[in-house]
Amino acid sequence: MAAPASIVEGFERSLRECLSPFGFEVQPFKVGWYNAVLQPSLHLSHPEDTLAVLVLSAPQMFEKAFKPFLKNREFKNIRDPIDECVAHYVSRAVSQSFPAQKVEVSYDYEMLPNRRPRFLAQTAAHAAGAAYYYQRKDITADPWGNKKMYGVCMHPRYRGWFAIRALLVFPGVGAEGLVQRDPPDCVPSQELRIELLERFNLRWQDWSYRDIVPVEERYSEEQKTYFNTPPADRLKLLQESGDLQICPSY
Ligand code: B12
Image (cartoon, rainbow, N blue to C red; front, top):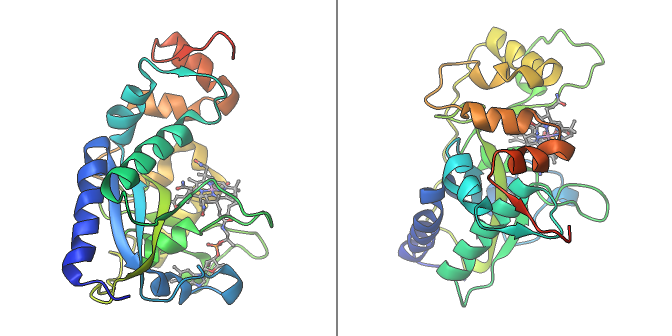
């Protein structure tokens, strides 16, 4: 069913109002834009005009959402604290904004039974116009031979200092009024694209791929320390900094 442009704008506005104070960005798009670049086995099984919204985390998410989320909370069966935090804010935004609307929510870390991701976050970011996805095939003469080189998205403001967190699909809501725009190409030269893919694949731990071009905002030192800590030690780090109380039964 085609929804008037004002309804789609209203959906986007309510989500933005719920999520942007916590350091998230939302970007609406049509399922068909995503499906158009993928083989049928990877398609989202909805009509091409169906409204979808991509949720990204900006650098401030750590301070605005994650740290307050941890305070006064006791964890029992904790998985990944960041994943739990994102799921908390996204599901609350969905239930507050759309109490009577069916919304399918997928997170970046969720896998299907065939071990494929539930959605390809980078392809969605590019198709939605949110962040340019630089792939090996965008480079005319690459120097890598048979080596597997993964692609990387660059955000127009945060460059590499962001993550793609969730996909919302609104079954039955048509978004005919949306117009597809290319994401800004902030790494236009071949030399820089080669350097970007090398940094992302060969030394992503030094963070330098995120700064390949000048950036407005980065992760704080505290956030970098958190992500530099092996996942198994992160709970201990949060406890030591006083940000998290662990439930004694854990
Ligand atoms: C599995 C996975 C990994 C695996 C494998 C990586 C891979 N790309 O396959 C491993 C463990 C190695 C990994 C590592 C990392 N990862 Co990882 N990973 C993922 C995950 C969960 C799925 C990626 C995947 O399987 N893709 C499947 C492959 C086949 O897709 P593809 O290569 O893009 O191919 C498709 C496109 O080419 C498309 N296509 C074809 N033609 C066209 C044309 C156009 C125009 C477009 C847009 C698309 C398109 O069709 C192909 C499929 O048929 C995603 C989250 C997600 N849900 O997507 C995060 C993700 C890609 N990882 C991410 C990151 C940051 C990392 C790490 C830096 C570690 C970290 N988390 O900090 C490292 C860096 C890589 C490295 N050097 O090791 C980020 C990337 C963010 C960004 N700016 O791009 C993501 C998006 C997670 C997130 N929450 O933001 N990762």
